Amino acid sequence: PPSERVRSSVIRVEKYLQPFQLSPETLQEVSARLRKDLLRGLGKHSHHKAPVKMLPTFVRATPDGTEKGDFLALDLGGTNFRVLHVRVEEEAQKVLKMDSQICAIPQEMMLGTGEQLFDHIATCLGDFLESHNLKGQTLPLGFTFSFPCEQLEIDKSILIRWTKGFNCSGVEGKDVVQLLKEAIHRRGDYHIGSVAMVNDTVGTMMSCGYKDQSCEIGMIIGTGTNACYMEEIKNVKRIEGEDGRMCINTEWGGFGDDGCLDDILTEFDVEVDKTSINPGVHIFEKMISGMYLGEIVRLVLVKMTKDKLLFKGQISEALGTCGLFETKFISEIEEPDSGLENAKKILTELGLDWSLVDASVVRLVCDTISSRSAYLCAAALATLVNRIRNNRKLGHLKTTVGVDGTVYRKHPTSKLQKAVRLLAPQCDITFLVSEDGSGKGAAMVTAVAQRLKKSCSTMCTKASE
Ligand code: BGC
Image 1 (cartoon, helix red, strand yellow):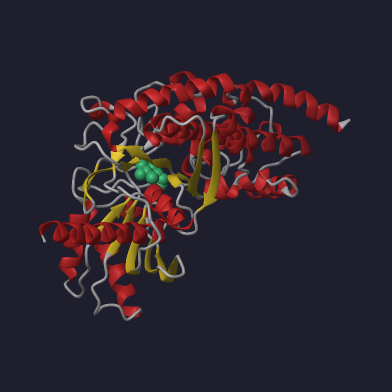
Image 2 (image 1 turned 180 degrees about the vertical axis):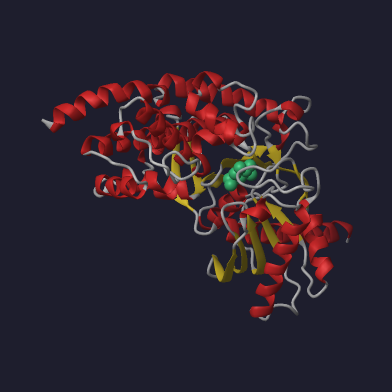
């Protein structure tokens, strides 16, 4: 009977999938290693070589609900580039997106020169201002730039390195705000006000923070993965000052870049890293995020087929081609109700001669790889909430995590949430999916920066009076 056949295949298949299955003890170990790496990243002398960069963001406060005004926002870092006009309304405690426009960035541009990229950004912004009659105004601008940057000030931010699909020449080591301003200057037909640079995790935290003021963590599981959280300034040894908190962009995607996760990497992870545009960089991210999950599944399916476990041993051209098994197929195949039907459709589209057993095995592979992604994220998130709880010497921490990214939105989140509860039992976490965090959050950061500047100048004037 088919169920017998399914069962015997499943047993053989399990051998392949076992290395992807991480026990609670392993996840605890991963969390313990990350805990140490967070300290290395925060340390005055250790941060230079730390794989988890723990970058200060100069965001010292989450919203208090009194922010207001009109802002422009740029969002670069995922699959698209966007320009937005955002209004923050104090009375309604709302961040409104007035208008927005998506500009595609062709792949050649992602791998071209920095000048081309920033000219393109300046053109998209110019077109947006023109078509929305905003050219005459000088609005403050929040720039969500979702790559690791050494932020020197809120408007001075040096790109450490490109990640995900980008690798433009002449930008690493440079101030990205300056490059943007230069590109706008080259056009000379419009002006922008003060600029605030923001990582997408920070934007996500801030946009959720307007609604829920206990939101002190921002997490992205999308094309890439990362998180930020509010750290005690006295623990950020590379920054002067003792009082208050600052948002730290962990850049946890780089966890494992020093080899500390080698024991849990599978041969497929090693292969994905090797064939990526940035080998050796962002090892943790490559096990978790949308840019890579589909490719991991594809490599597993190819090997199983070569071993005659699938598709009568026949690899189609599409299955044999790097990048053609898309991450979105995984979530379609995982669907509880229509997953099997979706699997059949996708396998047909990929030119494969499949049986019912094959389709079930493919579902199992997808489920295993997306679950590992969720569990690893859970381990990392648990490390952060446990750290915040310890920082504040609390027996119990209740906190909110602002979340965004297609992988989080499209995949079942119950595994991630359950695993975090297991790994951080003294923390009670609310997950708040951010609505357009990268866009609205950037405006929010700009608004908070303005509020602080105003209150500081009032305080300073008062002090001198
Ligand atoms: C980048 C982070 C970003 C994350 C999510 C990573 O590749 O290094 O800065 O937050 O992707 O977009």
